Length: 342
Image (tube, rainbow, N blue to C red):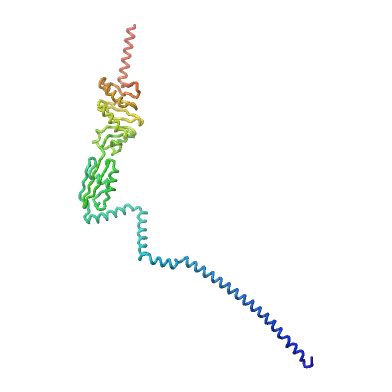
């Protein structure tokens, strides 16, 4: 190295490019790391934004119908459907209030009266009623049973419903209802006949021959009917009374037929005599009674009961007076026999 320092300067010049290259490399690495870090942050932010957008889109889909569904609804639903639904909602609310408040029957009656009034004003008022086959029931009773009133119109009258109401009455066995427009109503009835009086548990009723209870006994016009007493007597009376009628000697003096234990019959005669009939062979027992009365005037004797339940004998129960008289007679006979022996 000379005194001017030329060698030193040349060495420095040769070492500077290497130091600059290293510094540049280090700077590049730092920049690369920073760039990678920035890209990662951007990727994370993009992922978060994408997930958020997806969630928002899903929520929007759940809140609102798909555009295709909306288009289909708008296309195929009739116009003013909203108004119609509102009207239906109001009607439903009114109906619920009527039912909940217990006014349903009143509402139905009001609607029926309104439509009948319209029909009557149009010329379908019932102006003539013809009822055939009526014997026990009056015309007003029949119309009331059938639900026909002065407000009823022939147009809206349900003939089948009127017929069912009539047949539900025990006096009416069958009924036919005809509507003859514009204003005539025709009713054909088949009434049951009062057959007997039935007494059970202290109640007296008028019954038909099939055992149907027609009405409580309140009218004296049924006083001449035969009387049957006891549980089950109403259904068995027809056959027994028909059998009893074959023996007029017994039938004419019978006041009541009593069904005992739902098995057999007793007869209570008009003078209070009780006849206890057997469970079997009732016809033979009645024939024997007729014969005994004709030949021995059985029903005129001083007796209170005749027991025919045993097949091989007839037991007669004397009245109290007759029993005392019989006892006195036996005592007298014993005294006479004792006197003759002495």
